[in-house]
Image (cartoon, rainbow, N blue to C red; front, side, top):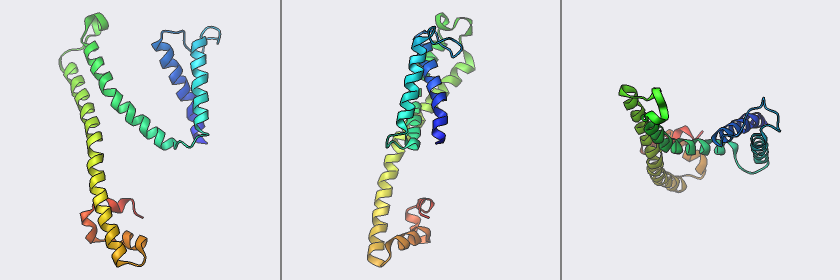
Length: 171
């Protein structure tokens, strides 16, 4: 469906990134004989993208996890960029300093904290959620002949304050 629209964009971005990183001749303006490696990466990326449509991989989950991986990998990339941005032999006359330098490190630290929080918070939430949902299931099984409806009612009621937030996903 609509996911097919993203394949050429992602394949093109991949081909440009790999080609420029490897210092190959790149560009759709070039003829395939002039940029063979670029067009091979473009074709392989498109083929992999199309093949993913025929697997059981959930595209939303794939999008989510690719964003998670991207966020985690951004921290070391930002650290390297901050070191390189301070070197005159790398940046020439565009070396950063002063407030911009410290703002860059502040951004890197914020990204690192978000990755640490992303790793720490779900485990805490899962523990509390399991305990809370176990208690609710037990209470509902004891008290009700219709557990799903009773559980929804319990989660919506004021007695569910021990498990805040669960009313959002139970409809």
